[in-house]
Image (cartoon, rainbow, N blue to C red):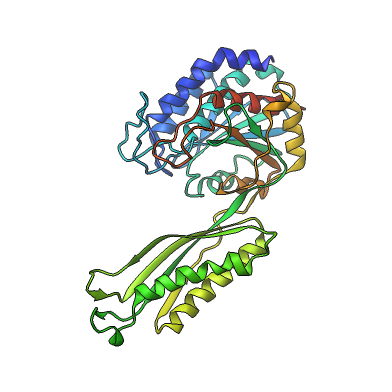
Length: 379
């Protein structure tokens, strides 16, 4: 297979896939239109597949005792699009603001080329069109389906703005963080704003809790380790002249090791309960198990993918990108299946992922297809 030639010939179709998918963004487990579109394309290619429920698809190409998987996520976000592009979202209040339309297009483009050269394959290739990445539920659904039981290795990628289009980061070791969520419900005693001595101000407790949580990273985390504790939402009070009797804090934690993850969880609970108690109130903490572990690339898969990629990309196309404190439920696959995950440049001048004006340089689509094909074709 001449990978460069095949991708050049398929470029217009791959871009069309992306633009078609961009028009119909759907959130986790609601990707019905998206799933139907992918089925139509696979049917046209003559590729067999099995549906996931309620959304998503696992397709299959080739034969052989060895099996590898390629994964793309397909869900979107509740973001009102402001790109002004000609193929903008047709679903008001929803947008492909994280590049998943591009990932699905890359996998469809890869599927078409692999099907064309199916007789050249020495292995079976599973194509995973995964729902619900943004809620960190989709990878678990795929794994629980049993459809990947024969897979010996898995490969995936993500398009990121801030990285020059055409550049690739494919590196062993920790690449993305574990993601935890927490909620803190604070109970005080409401009353008149002019009589604070008769009340227990939940707003003051919430504010103190937020500030105290910042000490976890600065004073409890090893300076050579990394962690993020972010309070993204705080609700308290009903009127300007009423002291709040209840408050709610919601946040997220990002870590790269199980030890740090455990420590941060313990400290969040201790700080929340302790701060509320010191100020005369009470706090209840909901801190469920992590939605996914850190994403750690396996060295053998990285080496295999790099051997293949080195045949079609130049040395200057590979760049170092430090590990990101972003979450990615692809890491759930890596708990049981050896694999790797690449970062693909979407354009340094683009708005960041999850922004209402996020877009990508469509050269990223070509890079993604070439990278997936290079990995599959490498022995």
